[in-house]
Length: 310
Image (cartoon, rainbow, N blue to C red):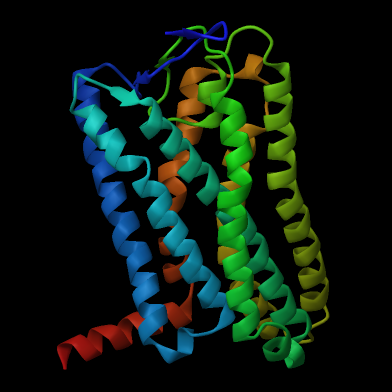
């Protein structure tokens, strides 16, 4: 179809991770197990936060929001990936591709902001403990969480529209396992400098602004912790931030590698592995990091087990 000198692509073909039938079965089993862990692990955090009064604090309220983001984020890509691994026909409609790209981008933005908010929560808790309940109260948490979700889904509209409007000259083979902004943009022909520059600027603002906020928060946290007289007090303060710092590192490093580079430096195989990391590995490890490294959560799990036995 030709309209205004542009070829309208009505469907795309996802080339996936590999064409090797044996390897497809192997990674199918791995990704299926990863998806089960993501669903179970994040659902457990949500359940514990709802049922255990000791976890009904701002930190765990934001952690619950992060768990919801991880569940929805992985659900927007993994089921389709699993289907394609067992299917010869890997065609995805234009509307489904657009929806997947919009949902993953919106949820990725939500996660960026949530991780920054969680850093601020730790900053207030450690640097201003006496004023913590006044600054971070329930009303503030609800407003922040609502704003985070709304901003994520509103800001993505313009970027997705810009990406989908790039002339692809009939190219519809996506060398990837999902519809993502860099991959759709790579199909573009002609002058797409404006689109590339817009996405790069978007990536810098979206990723570097929260990163800067997180770095400033943790610099002030570390300065405060170092002023604590006892080493036991220092270890306890650091332990409350360790899990969050690990999650932040995993998410932002992979996100920057995907969105903050020119198209000319893209290597399909590497790009796919990076995408696997922030689409699957990070959501899978988030609940494991927050549960196994957190005594309060482990205590809540034990209480839940005892209640079920009784």
